[in-house]
Amino acid sequence: MGAETRNGSANDITSDHKSEHLDTLSLIFSDEFEYEGRPDPEKWHYQVVGPAKGHWFNAEKQHYTARPENSYVSDGTLKIRALREKYTSDGITKSFTSARLNSKFAFTYGRVEVRAKLPSPGGTWPAIWTLGANIDETGNYFGSEYGSVGWPACGEIDIMEQRGWDKNTSLGYFHWGNTQTGAYQTEGSTIPNPGSTEEFHLYILQWDEEYMRIYVDDTLVHELSNTTDKPYDNPHYLLLNVAMGGNLGGEIPASFTEGIMEVDYVRVYSN
Image: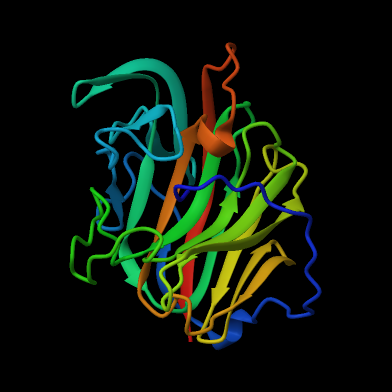
């Protein structure tokens, strides 16, 4: 969800690394959504103030809110619900609302599992991702606790994104600022993901001192070496959101009324 367009490329992964066995890991953060009502306030922070003078980056068309209309837990899952509606925040009126949840938990290295079903309408841009907790972005829950740098110096890991015009493909990408030159860099791949809007799939990140690997279920999407020119040795937090339009959402159909990303659970493991 960083401030650059991601076009993606065909999956050219040749690594034969497999998903790490959970017997060797300890659960350090989770939400099973076995309750009703608002997302657990001990675990989730609503980011609602647009960091770009009241707007969001990437030409997105929505306001994010903390209202139950846009995010709620029922029947064992979290729903993040994008709506077509006029909504004014900080004097700015937009035609769509949604929710952007940030974990109140930061971690360095581990395995992230998010089991989710993605929204089907065109124009929706769902994302499961992380940002370095040292980001200076407006509305960041951690403030300057972990430092204060801009994007992409903080590092971003897009465990799952999906284009608004292609609901049969998922993207796994990394975005960062080179720690030696400061230059923006990005790398990632796409993967066929048919049925992603009709059934749940597991979106996984495995991250350690040497490698970062993104999976859909048991299929490797992209592997990136965690070398010293990358800022992936610092705490990150998890984000769940559905954006509308913009770089990856694309054109929003006139028929759009609502789209829901449904999350069965979130689990973070560590060695």
